[in-house]
Length: 76
Image (cartoon, rainbow, N blue to C red; front, side, top):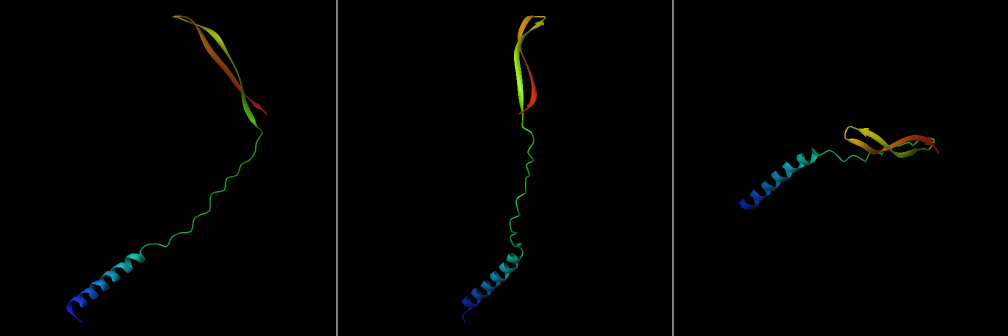
């Protein structure tokens, strides 16, 4: 065996020997966890009913026409 081939073989052994412990440090992949379960509890349907109008507001600078709105929840 020549000196070059024995050096190459020694370098290959060192490389493989260094790679094996590094590969052993990686943890095995975990299986995917199940998705969280979401429960929906139906309730009576509600919606908003609104009434809007314009009202006069008296201010120091003068009378202003101002939009107003009133809303409430209604079962549907």
